[in-house]
Image (cartoon, helix red, strand yellow):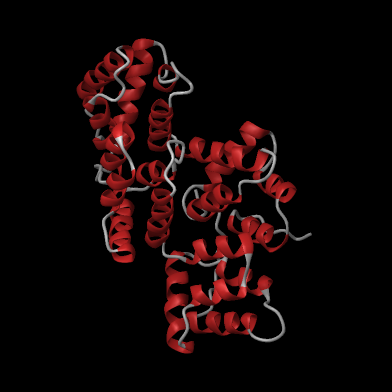
Length: 317
């Protein structure tokens, strides 16, 4: 599912660090050399490079990148080089600090990561920011949003394939009842969305569709301006069809006047090793243009080159 291109023979971390040091030294930074290394190493390899760089040169690679590079290129490379759990913790912390009802990064992290990955992100958050993610979420959010988010970020879902069909039918009826009663903030609705395995939830939503003739997200559009309903729709999409959720984030980031580099950077950095192939296929299906062509049309320079490398499309032009 990932599109990240890692060579069959990867140099040792010490060799990579020597090359990175060479890229930083001398007259001007060699961005292409940096991309050729870091954009073609998986998370474990990047972690080894960071550790070795500190051991060999007594410097933090991330701080060196921040000092040597600028703008969106630096932001993307920094985010990419972070350990995935640190990256999620950092993104979550930024999202909490500038919380708005339409800021869905916290939902995204809570619902598209595996239970184990979310657990690691919570550990990293605790280590980096000396408090728990749920503490920060509870402090910075209120009402139904706060209740939903705290439940989602503290969730530890079962990851197995088993489905309880009877339960799926029962919970489809529960969801339908509360949605019909305009009580989408009911504890039962939040409990089902926040605790059920993704496989179980998919079964429940399939029963909902078959039994009541509508996909649940259509029924949750009764008031398009309602921000809580929007959050519920995003929660469901992230849990059940993450590639469609991320495709829409990319489409909105690239296709509007003025690129949303923050969203583009976040999605590429977090999904390149996960499901970027599916996201890119969905993007082409929806936009009738390959994702790499859309990136080329909308970005430039080293930032463009790094984006293309991370989605598996080197720019040879």
